[in-house]
Length: 346
Ligand code: KG4
Ligand code: ZN
Image (cartoon, rainbow, N blue to C red):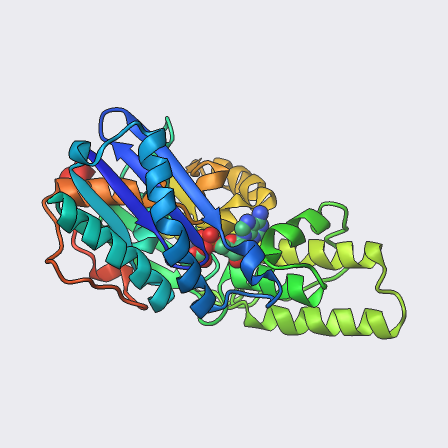
């Protein structure tokens, strides 16, 4: 079985061709980072318009790279939510229409399920059940994954997501958008101990997160250093290292707590912040001490891509799920509302 997959929930236009025997045959991506940079963040209307321009040429490029004709395709998967509604609709409209024209089934995929299943693209796939730490620009969640499709949210953020905390802190430090990777780069030369940033909710039982207080603390530190005339490159690196440490420390300690509570011995780390080296290092060490193995997607599949949508799409199409001819997308959509995929989990 071979499928085409589209991702357009935010600021990456991406297309993949995936085969259940041969694996990933092609994946193409166009990042809109340059388009949004001057605004310091994603402008939804511009994102939608750019997806409209980019997606079809990416489909052609992916089909060519995969040496695949439409007649060889058995289905089309596209991200149907959650995300920016205009951006989602461009991919949903294209995906649904291509499937209609090619007379194959289409399936709308939950973006976070894509992130959660991305490690299945790696040679060593995670076992089910497992615990998942999902850390992206829009979400921070600990999820018990009993089987593909069966997701129980154990805890999530009450306000900002971990990626948002990286991005907002980076902006306060004057780093260009998107700030997460830039802040991580700046942090490598800094001392994490000089600034002691808050680690909210750690003192409380439970698995919830809160990162909104961090940006206030960072903005105060930046202001104080600037007014003292000491906001030099070294200080900025120390602040960056302190922020990264506060975020990583919070994520690692709550994840350990969740491993203990659930008794799971495998951990999946997914989403854009999963690309962060410091987080990977600390999670590897902590999980090893707790007797758990950690599974990551490769770095390029931590952030948004269509390969992960293809994996989820293949599973759901094989389980017999497909859409009516209506084009549907949803800006918000709970992971817990997804139907299970019994056959994949066994
Ligand atoms: O999963 P993703 O590509 O998009 C969403 O679905 O949100 O995640 C993007 C987020 C951004 O906040 C970005 O700054 C963050 O992931 N990110 C990182 C790193 N790479 C991406 N944060 C920290 N360190 C990184 N290396
Ligand atoms: Zn994402």
